[in-house]
Image 1 (cartoon, helix red, strand yellow):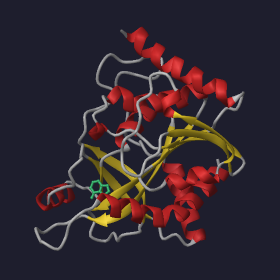
Image 2 (cartoon, rainbow, N blue to C red):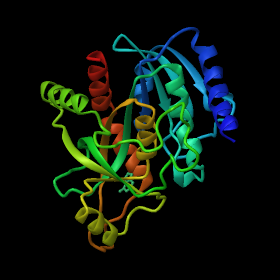
Image 3 (cartoon, rainbow, N blue to C red):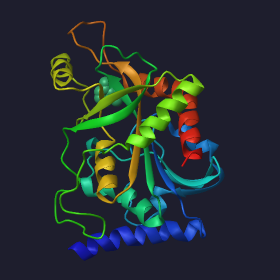
Length: 276
Ligand code: HPA
């Protein structure tokens, strides 16, 4: 059983590697809803549609395309996921883990993740960029099942899941670039429903600053295989804490709001990658 799981990862990695023609990416980048534009900034891009990779699912989420894009960003070799997979789409966790493990086999040492998130922290406003300093996982753990020893240990530590040095460098860059960055704890639940006001109040109480439906599975898989992780949430809506008729969440608004912040996020990622 283990062999077939490894085989699936290896054959997907091999299929991508053949198209990279010797390039070894240093950074893997996961682009969240409405944040796919960073992929357009990648120089000399090689575009690899997920549907041409053996064993890959096809992303169905709003605001997500389905490609790996490899090339140069800030003079470094990167590979970006333009479109990610979500648990709410019905994929097993094993498939959410697959692209991260494929990028690991291709040689990445860092994983940069981004997402659109609801603001649970009352200090956060729409348009804020928040560095993820920790998470609370309310999804199934992607490492459940027989451990793939080749990638990492049975019981990985998550004390510093989000690399402290990268957070510090990003804060410094944020000040230099005038980005007004904040820091917060990302709370992941399955979706696809947005939270009820009662849930928002509950999640706030337990320490959530941002609410989302992604990112944590990829980060857990990345930490399992020793990648250094940096994450940013873009606040696209402020989570509702009262049951009022005039407040509601809308996926098209989320994508549109994220799109407005893409430029700033691209700048932060690019400048941070320059410093690696
Ligand atoms: N909740 C969960 N996921 C989200 C939200 C939200 O309010 N906004 C964007 N993704």
